[in-house]
Image (cartoon, rainbow, N blue to C red; front, side, top):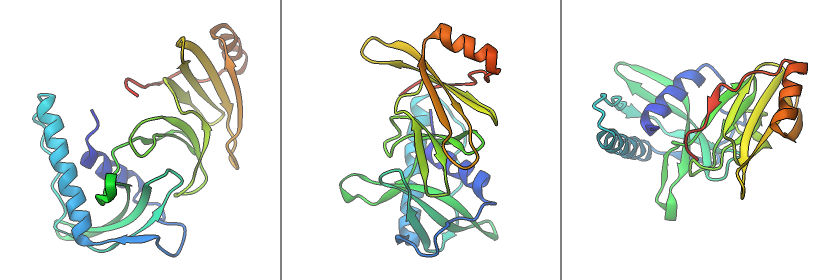
Length: 217
């Protein structure tokens, strides 16, 4: 179960040291009221999910106040990266937070999909609905170029190679891929490979293990 508000806070903590937005101007600005509404909505949804799962873990406290947040649209449709400055306790802090456009022009909500590091600048990223996982290479804070997807079942990586496994429809046949990592671009994709062919490549190249498993899509 993925809790939107907890995820946003954890992501912000991990990304807080990086320059928030590469471009000098914003595509739009979220007001204090919009940020507060998004946080309260996420908190209510997290509470409902926790209750449904029989959990009683305390939910994060909301900030006391927000300053207007400049936002830039990312390469993921309907997802924006916002420079959020909020008052927690007695301290103002600025972090990067991802928002997603709500359905039927219902405003911006905290993004509760997937955007996580596999290795280096390679990311596992979902679409705005939190579905259709892809492997992408992060060119900058706003742009992640698709390398392979949109279906991924297992993944792993190191500074030299990224490994991906997926079961392709309609027969759910397992297919394997590996990517030769590059520092200045998405790298080179090899595959699809059968299980036996992938095993041979794994032994020859010392490919990394699969350390991530997708339990739902």
